Image (cartoon, rainbow, N blue to C red):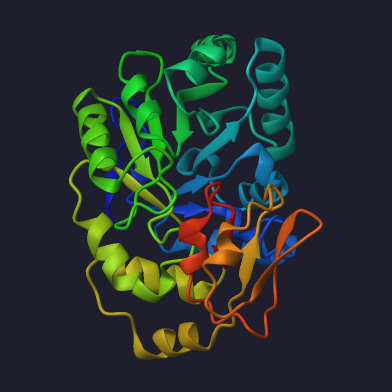
Length: 316
């Protein structure tokens, strides 16, 4: 496994980061023992970096995981929507308590949109920085689907890490295209920010173009790590092979092809109907203000996901 230092944080991370959303109750909802087994397997294969969030409800998985492997060798990033000091304190204390750890490696403000939202969350940011000075957090940052937030973060010295959405089609970027995002990321990288990308497969909607997706992100120079959601040992092994420039073993490749995936619609769907209007299979309907899928009609083309303004459609 390739490792690098995440910007100016001094934190050593694997180039492949394990995105924990996929195993969470929000998506595949793996039983705790199976989820922990997968995290341990990934660690033993060389992955030391794990991305989660308060929203994902995966703290119990991580608590059991870090009982089985040395805590100092594991890097955990989590996120919170807290916007004031009280909420930030509650989020940090909850993360520490539920994971059974004395510190969080990277604490991010979740889904920042622009300089305005950073300013709106500044009280929380100040709290995290004070917690960092006390040793409860090693580095502070933000996650975002917006180019404006990446650009704005450059002027904040306390924001050390940026977790932006990057994929070759720009799926999920809310305020521009992939070229604009890459320019902003390059500027942030040059300013010393740690950059770890999210959604290289567009939340699974680009999974049929997996190789093209990975070729794209692996060819970028201004990224320290790439978070990928994984839910089976075969996915872990396959992704490690790809990240190391090796051919995926035939037996693993065949098992991946047999894995049954599904279209997943997040709870925050607002029922705008864009997905339904662009579904050539007529597999989507709006029911009680939410998009719903007829799995018998869905062919998992992923086209609907690219049309969702809230990025709430995934293939898992």
